[in-house]
Image (cartoon, rainbow, N blue to C red; front, side, top):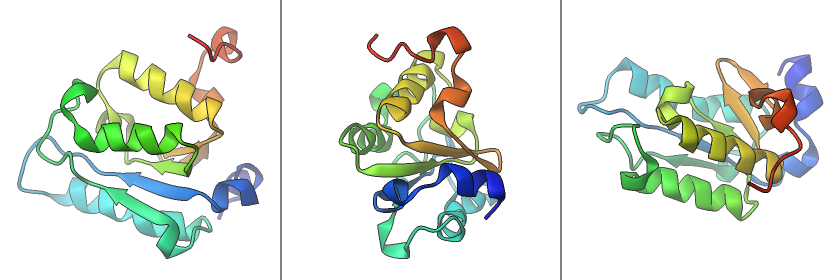
Length: 140
């Protein structure tokens, strides 16, 4: 685990789940899908116990243009909303969503629930993805 990740991940995060979100618009799966499933091992390397890692992969074959038609994404949001997730892992933002509004709502939710986000090879605090003038505005 890198020093930067160590400084962000706390015991409070580790007692909650790490959720790996897997989505691919086309079927059959390919190398990208395999790389997304490999994020489970990344969560272990970051300190999560294997039994606390959940892989949400119900959205394979669904486009990321809207969360409305993706049951897996809705489950992910529900788990984060309930405060059950300490770390969300996705290969890249486009695996989570391609709709800016859905991304903004997800980032706000992660900030509100102190859920870390693993993207692009690093652990991020949700506030890192928000403009500085919006960092304190969680009630929209």
